[in-house]
Length: 135
Image (cartoon, rainbow, N blue to C red):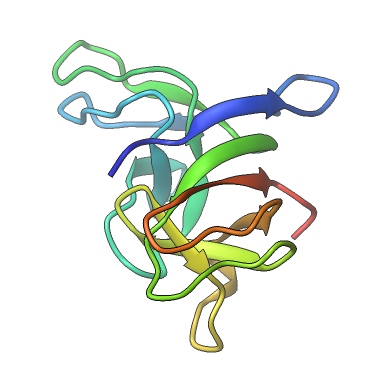
């Protein structure tokens, strides 16, 4: 699926970037939803309930020697709804797969929460999400 697209970065330091460790062999697109793999080390999201860490602020090319990357943790981003149901305005959304979100379900873990839907969206529709909204 497509990566998140920045609509607006929020905060005194725009986007409130956090720097994480990333494997030299990893490849990430700018805007990729990332998860924690080990302490302060990130990889791309891949499955339901992955522990959300942020949104990649830059591209990471395989074997480029780079072993750290900044990830945005606060802003408004366009993200794809890959759920089997419509997301309504104001619903919390969580990781459902590779760069995909869905409304939070009872079985979802808190660490997989991404943010709050700022608009409604049907299946496979891109919606604006407020990321880093105080949870």
